[in-house]
Image (cartoon, rainbow, N blue to C red; front, side, top):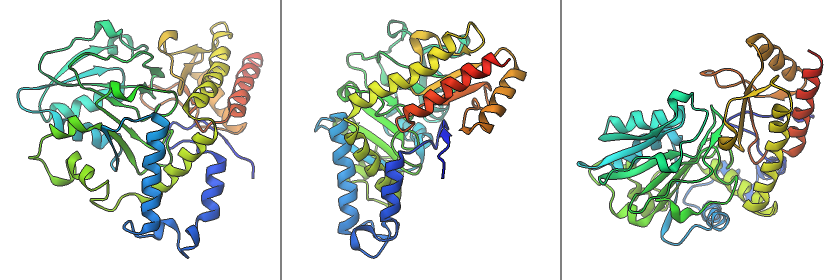
Length: 360
């Protein structure tokens, strides 16, 4: 079987090595006579998977001891509501920086729960850049400042985080977690759906400072309290066991690659291959994001007309490239170069782009 060049935005590519290892264990996990999908989430065998995934995540991101690692469900979309439900108390303000559709959705949910404020926005510029940190407005009554670290639809990414004294920074890192080193202690809460850099869809990672947990609201439904899941080690209800198992396999793979620093080096190499094809095309390909805001994970671009976009995408599909269509809300083209996308796929796309231009 020949593997596709998978540039899907999510669910996205998984390392072939991980898929093969999971295949080997699929029907008989550690001589239990059962698949990991069949194990009780209270069993010793599953408990080892659960604890190992937490341990490796802590190791890779160098998460300090005063943070909790939670495995939840519902994706980032549930977090959009769960964050203000837990932390947006009466008299406080949820401060949101708008850099794309997902930050808009997060703000929309918060508005249903409490007072909100837009600290900065690049919407009027078509979300082609990230705001300057110096331009973000902060209020003394902010409950938190919320950002989306990488914007899959528009292809922009924060390269300097807005760290302010006495302000709890919360980040949706669904599409760029583990793509580069970060200082976890700059954040009060990080959340990420797994289906881009961490594994298959089904599990959501939350890394939350214990101090923030201690000040969370308790007059909300039990299952929506972060403290509920912290107290139960993410086993309050049946967790997505197979997704967590696959997460552990992906984390093992990242460690084998040399850790996050090595992965970042490769991600820079991959993105450069495609950005260079855009920049060297003399305007044939036009990148959406401004250069100082470009994403390592999602490369968005257009050709000179809708007709050329459609022709490019059709010929790319015929050549074995998958997932290059831009998001339905903006159109154009998008190559998602997440951690698991091999360098060879990006080299192949670069060559296809060069050849396609020559043939027009």
